[in-house]
View 1: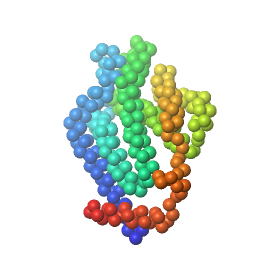
View 2: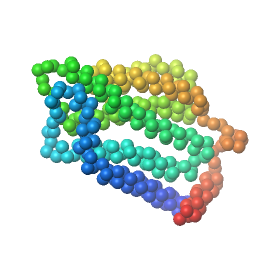
View 3: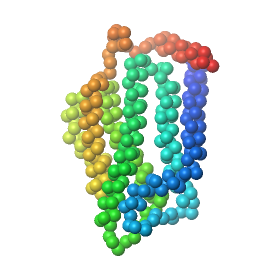
View 4: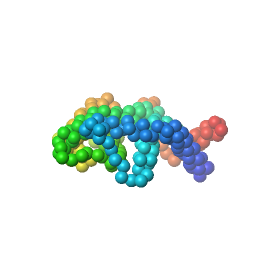
Length: 269
């Protein structure tokens, strides 16, 4: 019985992964005709900072084709991310207790929104600031013509760095919720976190002070936001929903729960 249940879960996981991949593929096919326009939109902050009449260059033979396709894939991934997370949530939700569901779903939604906000902050504010700063200090004797592939790699790195940076409140909340550290301990390590934030910013951003500050300062502010939010989340509950002392389910209870889930799946089929 347990082997059949395990196989049924693998089948369900496969189906949900296929649904997510199909959604990604459909959106990508829709976006491919607009791939060049999407790259032009992505390159807008750089083009606005370059001198009048400047253009980017492509040093590879197939680079002008592959780079816009990569941009379309990136946009398709972001657009289908909510659906992918929904499939992941639908897979794990039946095995969660009610108090776990009340915590996981808001965290999934909040982490997605924060990641997208981090990307938007990087695109609309950081890029404009950094590119204009670099262009102003660049020697007037050189002609700036960035390579489109290098620019895409730079953009993806920055998007990932700022997207993960904006997840800082989620990390703080989860650490306190799981009881790994207390809120007081996090407050005590605040000076060390500030140093770590600037070290991370110096590693993942270009070697200029402006971009490093634009990453380190938001990280420190978001750490404070996480401390504030952790006050309302608290630590892991010690009581179940019915008020009795919470205890981990035994093997028999786990088997009964798996049998119930399997029966529900057969009923839906």
